[in-house]
Amino acid sequence: MEAAMRASLSMRLLEDIERFSRLFLVKEIGIQGIRKLREVKAAVVGCGATGTHIAELLVRVGVGRVTVIDKDFVDISNIYRTALFTEEDARQAVPKAVACARALKKIDSSVDVRPIVTKLTPANAEDLLKGHDIILDGTDNFTARLIINDFSVKYGVPWVLTGVGTWYGNVWLIDPARGGPCMRCLFTRVSDEGPNVCDVLGVVTTAVSLVASVAVSLALRHLLRIESNNEDLPRTYFVIDAKRISIDSFKVTRRADCPACGKRIFEYLNKAFKEEVAKPVCGTKAVEITPGKGQGISFEEVKKRVDEKRIVSVTEYTMKILVSEGVSITLFRDGRAIIDGTTDVDEAIRIYEEVTGIKLRE
Image (cartoon, rainbow, N blue to C red; front, side, top):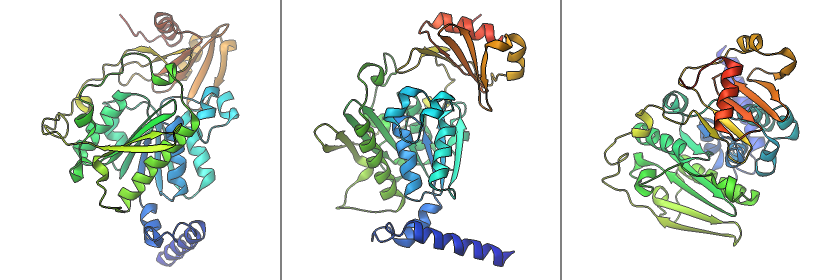
């Protein structure tokens, strides 16, 4: 048994040497760097534009385990700004995390890719993120980032914050465990109120690619402890301009009165999840429904409630039902749903309750 295991490991090493033959020539990486990356466990939260580009780069540079977390499914509007997704994924409404994982396995079948189809919340964050060496942000909202930041400070796990809008983006390696500031040292007041940037301003694909490349470069330098000109990465916030083709930076100072890394008050990780039950989805004519904790959906029970002819598709992860002309509902097993074809929150709630039998409002 031991001989077989040694032979298997030797074969894996030989395959890696061939696969990464140009990468291990880089003096800061080498064979030892590749072997170390093979042991890394990275989590990518959000498999949209930035997240898919980040996940692909992580796999291509040799990270051994990549967990991809996303609540949504592929839409045709995702394809131009994302990596990995196809028109077929959109036609079949494949969950983003699943589509991402399938594509990553085709790039490197030896990588342990773990798709998780759910939304990151205070209730599940610790279970989802524990055990990872680094977390990379592919989300589109401050609330998710604040949850990640609290987790990072509490457990000493570094993370890379990203953001993209139109031609511009920002990237920041946050590592409070090594004395760096955290997100709340810079963003003292944050809110998700108002429309998302991608709804109002849009995003250019090249800006997304640049942000993802910088994010993964920072992750590599951190994981392999690569230093450059005494640069203090955990205190350096990068601002990317894909239109002017430039990268600027400024230093962030750790605040003693920071609620998270200063006072160690993790209000976003510990508080009850108080998100709206229903809210419009960024960049679409749709409403997302998020019921309370533990409110799952039985597809078998739903089948008993609706006309079979209205069921468009049923997969391992989702069930899509036609409600009326131009309006449909896609259900997820964890209780969430996307009502496509309307932005009326009250109408979306009515449809959800009628289809599932679950009351969202008394």
